[in-house]
Image (cartoon, helix red, strand yellow):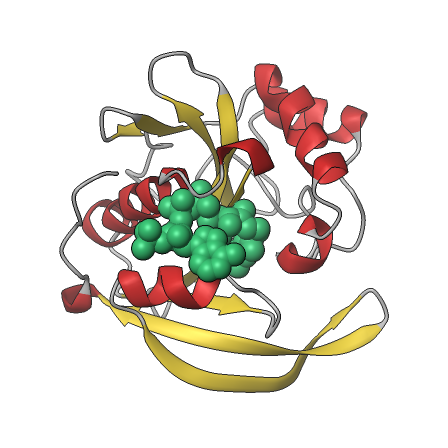
Amino acid sequence: MRDPTARVHKSPTIPGVAPPELSDGRVQVRALGARDVEAYLAAFDEDADLLNLLGYEDAPKYEKLRRWFAEEWVEPPELRQWEFAVADRETDAFLGTIMIHSCDWKNLRAEMGGWTVPSARDQGVGSAAFRLLLDWAFDRVGLERIEITALPENVSIPHLAGKFGFTYEGTLRKRNLERGRRVDLLIWGLLKGERAPAAPPR
Ligand SMILES: CC(C)(COP(=O)(O)OP(=O)(O)OC[C@H]1O[C@@H](n2cnc3c(N)ncnc32)[C@H](O)[C@@H]1OP(=O)(O)O)[C@@H](O)C(=O)NCCC(=O)NCCS
């Protein structure tokens, strides 16, 4: 997940797996669309640390996002990363994204990540999206292990990971090269049978 537009596509090549339309009644997870571009871009202006926390090299650009969201990208042929919009169930307002990435289909594992727009944070949106995509990834896609990695300075992920039953598995030392510096990544893992039961929505 090092560039938000490279290697990302909305069209799966896994037979039988369609883009999800998930909802818990308050939050929905759906395909990204042209209507999401402005709000997607604005989040990177509003939160100066978002690029860093996501490990992206460059801020997303309008034209590239517009093309990406309007098309069904199918390249490369192997699905490595799949990103979706998180939106308000009633108004369809864009609230963030949630994705599986670093997919390894031989070993049936992937990483999960995402972000919410600053104005939607700490209201249960990220947790709701995480829950929906986690259930989809295990129960519909057939993944057997989900990982989360985060920079040591990420303050919300340790809590979020613990809440879903992830086990903290250690520090991957100088794992990635991000904008010219090697960074440590903390890693959490969750096996299919280990999901913590859903907490009541806030
Ligand atoms: C991680 C993120 C998606 C969570 O989204 P959110 O909409 O704020 O999620 P929630 O409101 O469901 O909060 C999740 C939990 O984390 C806690 N939390 C949120 N921000 C926190 C912070 N700064 N410090 C400690 N805990 C925090 C919330 O209190 C909540 O706990 P609770 O469910 O026990 O009440 C959001 O903070 C974000 O976009 N962060 C920047 C991008 C990022 O780091 N993405 C992850 C990359 S791996």
